[in-house]
Length: 229
Figure (spheres, rainbow, N blue to C red):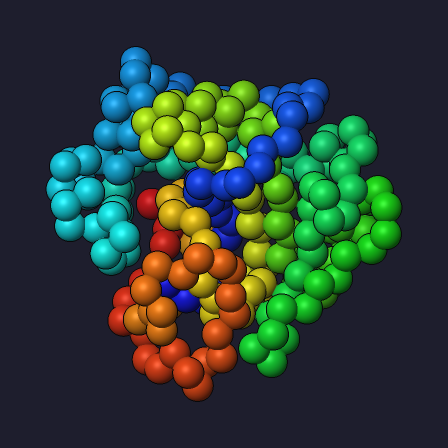
């Protein structure tokens, strides 16, 4: 469904996954995920919704929102990826386009603010703080072991490749215009909160990423604030 955009990670089926790179590990909170098997991992990801209910009522049918007022879970999510991780990652040689995109939604359109070549952390921070740009970090599981472990179990569960992106958006800003994703997506709010609007699809099960104008998609069918707690 089209969606509208303080930081969240998306787990979704992807067509391509890059090789792992040298890891950057923050102090990780004890895992609240059940890694015993792919089935148990997925069940813990969508808890308290049961997998059989999810596939019968929600999968490719409608969005599902799970709110859990759980401080332990919030601490675990925050440990998966932090804004402070970017400084160390930039020193390892990140590149615009391949690893990071910088963007804003301006007048209903996506404006890409990427520079050329390697990402400079000082410039990245300036774009975030002063230009209120969203930082999109591609495939963070290359550097974060816990994310890789989650995705490996999801790949076994769904029988397909699984990728992830991290989006970090400044307060009061919007990174992307309303659009379709061409993958099934699980969103984890890692820090802060984000205001979401979901719309009735203009085509069933979109097969490619597509931006939709706001005058075409009408009024939201779902509107909510996604929070860590």
